[in-house]
Amino acid sequence: MAFSFFNLLKPKNKIGISEIISEIDFKDGTKYAENSSNKVYLDIEELGGFPYIKTIIIGDFSTKIKRIGCTLTFVFDKDSLVLSSDNTDVESNQIKNTIANHTEIDFELTEEEAVKIKTEQVLEIQYTFKDKILVFTPLAN
Image (cartoon, rainbow, N blue to C red; front, top):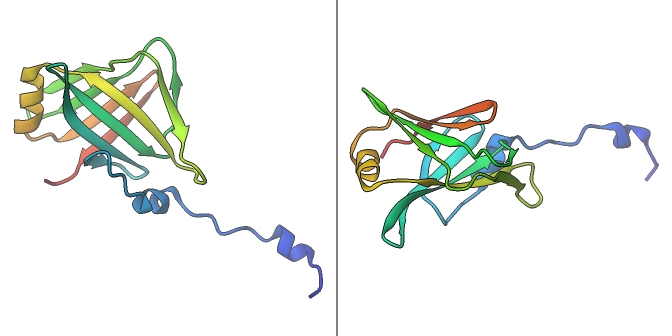
């Protein structure tokens, strides 16, 4: 077999982020919403008798925020609900051997807010970071 520069310069087959996230089978959360390049896993959980929302964003989104945290907005038919992140530091981590990232964020929640999210139809959710807003469409239940 002869050496060829053509093989060195030939572009490698790149796998798109949508293909990568479609292959990820995340078992520690409930798939809740998605956009073109990210998926959100969201669960309402309880710790010490207090509810909170545990979310994980998997896809091409990546961030590193110190001291200001982020917000999560649930948009309903006639109003919206804005929640603040439990931690002021938010950081994405790359998923091993892929170009995808995962970002874990917990949000403070009251009992009334938990009931509203569970019972009313959510039209979209929005994560607001320093200078970026990510919009997701909830999956049909």
